[in-house]
Length: 201
Length: 201
DNA sequence: ATATGTCAAGAGTAATTACTCTAATAGTGA
DNA sequence: TCACTATTAGAGTAATTACTCTTGACATAT
Image 1 (tube, rainbow over the protein chains, first blue to last red):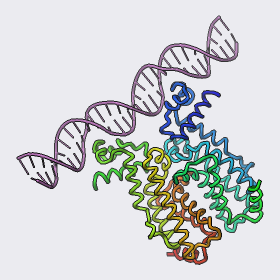
Image 2: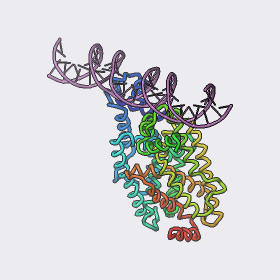
Image 3: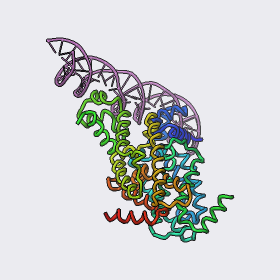
Image 4: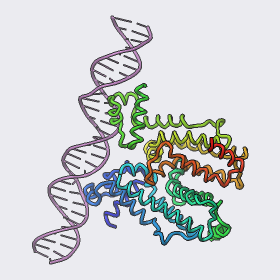
């Protein structure tokens, strides 16, 4: 593997186990046994590493609009994928607001990505209604559910940590359960049937 | 006002406008025009200041168990109070996980407080059901709603910031709206009536 | 009056951070 | 082979951080 990629992996590992402030570029270089000069040859500074990790995470998780989940099962399958990414890059969500306050570029980039993400989630719920999985009595239920998903995706793991529990790869199941609970009042009989089958398989 | 209290206020102001890493003890001292020596006479280090601010915040927000909201209106009134505190100490929730990772003492303290807080919220929902404001078909709805409240209280403001919106004192109204939306499927007619009157007054 | 504790100033410093710079080596295409 | 570019090591450093230490002013208690 290239040094450039190894730097990312080592940084990610250190960021996840400690935090981005404690893991300086000097530490990262030492941990992977290369010189500081070498590290700085590949990445200008730590911000650049974090930014690259962010973009990498984005590539691993973004669904294009045409590939949005069409029904309830696809939605929960997609959430399974997301949970892996959220675990892999857990340092990022742990420190999210702090990181954004230290890097204006990352901040503006994250915000515009996040707005787009929010819109895709909203569209997904409209899709679900169109496909008869969701029964939406009032219009602003879409906003309601969208906000719930945003909160859970971004902050479920951090919340778990504030309750003294260690998070792990599978810990997101609880989040999925929570999301289902939030949607349940609006799920149709058809959707519930699909989910039952999905759970059995 | 005592120097000791002025330090807290200045630190809070700086923490809120930038972040806890950028606001060093040297900066705080300079901002309030006292010497570093003087600042360190009153507080051992920055961690001590943050810890004190945390305890202050706690005092301003904790309800004793006997004073828990008894019905839906008291609940939302309490949330109004909480929203002021969340705004006043917004730096804390912005950086929550980062701060906990840097200070083990704060971490263990916050976690035990938070667990107690969670329990009080759960009890409040049981209270609401007892008073006929909440209709709970399945038992785990209590957990569901408790998790929702925890997420919203702790992370609503941070989420708003990740969508590019500035938060302010009144910004928590949206959070309240969201919470109501989450509870709506389980609110009784009686509760909805109370809320209508509450909104009019 | 003297002693004692409190509060404050500010100079000084060890340690750390976030790099830069130079020089050397390895690889690659002409 | 030679020229050039890419990669790497590691010494060196300016700036910052997070304090400590000494000194002195005041207030109060004895």
